[in-house]
Image (cartoon, rainbow, N blue to C red; front, side, top):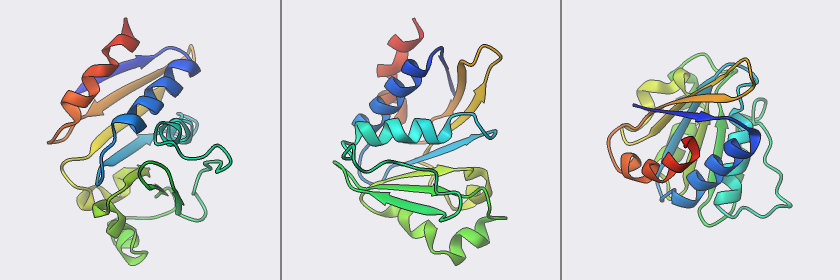
Length: 156
């Protein structure tokens, strides 16, 4: 586990861009946290790091469940807020995107926990009273430990 404090919106955007820059084909990032915690904002910054064109505005897929954007890697942005459990995710075929050669970013991931690969990066986001964001990162198994070392500079 790694804890990261993002004190400002600029820190959050920088963190997201760096996630997008270090993402590899087949990566999965799970974002959990209360409404308004910053999951979609972080995903927008991840899209910038993936070089998704600025004219493709990244929005929350709460009602569509899924949006796809083209960048250095395809970005598969999913929101499971309105789903009950992993069976709903499978019924919609969304779990198939977890193994494709893009980056899958899953909001409200806890609803599909059993389907997500062990190599995922899981981030639980909490908005603090001063509007900073506290991130608890579960690095799973794989390369995220190494890749997240570049973010140490943000917390200094």
